[in-house]
Length: 293
Length: 293
Image (cartoon, rainbow over all chains, first blue to last red; front, side, top):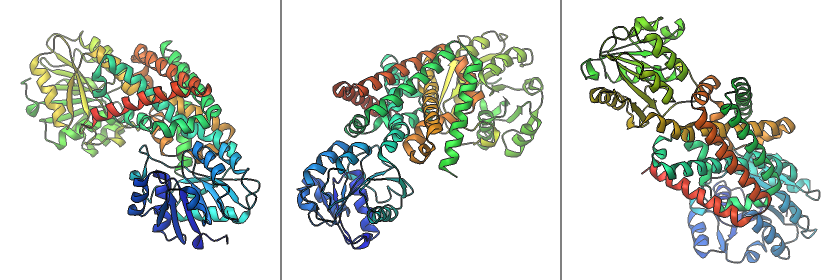
């Protein structure tokens, strides 16, 4: 392809929350020449056209990608890895192949096996909703989000530039990052919050089973801290199990910290408790100032 | 006093976020005859008058409570317990003595030692902000919040009725609950979310110390789940240490659940992970439907 998003025919495989939102954002901004899509579910294909996510949609992903200059795989991580193998013969020469998966190492490893005339690059927009599916799609989903880009050694400067243009076109900010580093960091910043919310919610559920007045005495603190426990289970299983070493390590470290806090409280170790909580509050203030400069 | 909030002279001891907001809400709604207050800090007293939290303010709490029909102790829990002893001789005969403390058992135990001509009742509005202090006060703070009321055996029906009137006057909903039951439940619904947020934030801080790109890849999930880690440390120390057995038990249970999730992920035990996360998601959906019927 010419290294120009505006003249590119874009194809999105998987018309859920992320793929559907990306199509809406690209089409609303007239950022590219056309957006075609593919989804296994006929109803989703019809809905994607009706909602303005795509110009047209194919049942078979191979038919969708054949003429595309820029293919974006927007399915769960394990499906992306599978699709990279299945679609490899169908990509046209010079096509850019990108993805929106939440874990990058297994995808970038699979991308390394693509034919040499295809240009791969990993992508991960740092945004989402608890509700999965096209019905929750929103062209503003990416606005002000960080959008990670994980180039391979073989990724050309032109391909990276097109990817950056796409990120800018949907209102997000590019962050170029190596895939393993990405996965190590999001295990803590993105996957651990889900597990922590789940542990809190499960503990509350156990308490509520013995005394259902519990739900009457929850307020905004519980609501916000537990919010992610409502996330789609299939989506989270896919993420946790494709980043299992990093996630398990992060969860063990957090569990140890929580147990240490319990010990300090049970032992009424005021000194230790105060220094731990004060240092944590300072960390929280620092990260907030990083996020909101 | 006559069992009538409208004709009552109310006195608020401690003009921080909770006390200051309560005074604003009562005065804005013309819910009582007058609101006097007391705070150790001269600047806070002046600010409380300027912001409309109180009609007048005394440096010495004993002077403030002497003529009050309804005294509301709005300091941290341990200060409330101390004040109940110090102010006991100053309360006028027939006065209602209430509090806004986050933990109820130690306060209700101290209230049991008040002179027999004083009417005690424990109170705890389930709302707050991370920012403590009068500057964050807001007359709408209590709107739609659950306001726990913990009567003692000696608390009369008239006193409970006045307390219910006060709760309604600030826009909150009364929940009458025994103090030990309250403390067991809020350990899970309110104090555990803080500890979970702190464990998450500390783990992220440790990761960021090795790779400060971490804060670039945090999104709304981390932000909401970690929000409570910014809470005032003195306030949280007071709460955690006056409810230590319940809180330590809740934190240990949550730490065990988090470690069990780590084990299931590390062992790629897909079956166990899915059933745990699906049950947790269902608990989350149930509690949400309880909160938002």
